[in-house]
Length: 320
Image 1 (cartoon, rainbow, N blue to C red):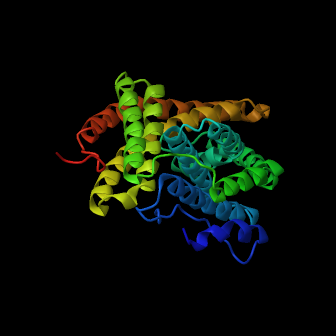
Image 2 (cartoon, rainbow, N blue to C red; image 1 turned 90 degrees about the vertical axis):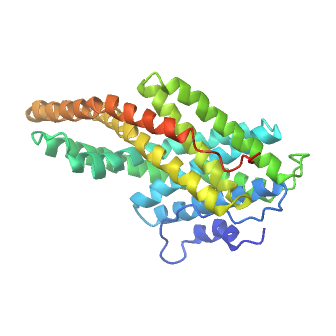
Image 3 (cartoon, rainbow, N blue to C red; image 1 turned 180 degrees about the vertical axis):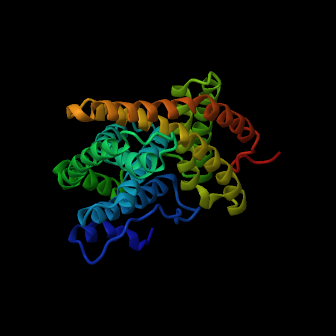
């Protein structure tokens, strides 16, 4: 586990030079690692991405940096969940809970970034009246949310969480008796796959909430596949992930709908100048209505694509 990225945790706090957003890097650990060591290596990978993007945000507002920070926290959450279940270590749930709280503190800013820079900017619904007022209000809310991001990453809770993850990654706590990485990985991948299948059946209802849960399940499956990619054929993993990402991106359109509803609801609760009430309400209603009308079509296409995805043989399943 001799990896230079472990130094990122201490170096980024010093704000050395220009720091840019960092995407998740491919898993680098050797297939011969024991499950416990693979877990620690995965924590280090997640930690490197978190601390690097937190450092980028300390240098100023970075939309991509915030996006990658949230991705890093979600990858960490998936690792704690997957390995925690495998090792039967329930106490890891406490660490997951703390991570979810921190993620919630900067999620509003990320939602407003998407709302302003993608959803409002595209203005697909064809209504221009009230659009300037809607965007102005969203920008104002976004500025406030970004102040919250700065407060979050400067807070002692954030630092303690990072320190605790780092301590866990470097500890020698006995977590598992099974020393066979391939079997442990297969069990974890199977658990994620079963979760997706269960949610896929529920999503057959076409309800937005069920489709959303399927999307989250697919995301966790994707992260877990990426964690264990070194154990399997690069070609097979790549083919499977390509199908998985395509389905996940398609379901992402539903997330845009949820984003529009929640953000607009929050914006309309704020006090409005009398002269702007009509125009603002009109633009907001048109936007919510247009996106809401896309749900049946998006859901239908997503389920069709999911049925095709179910036929793809998982790369970790041995052919008999």
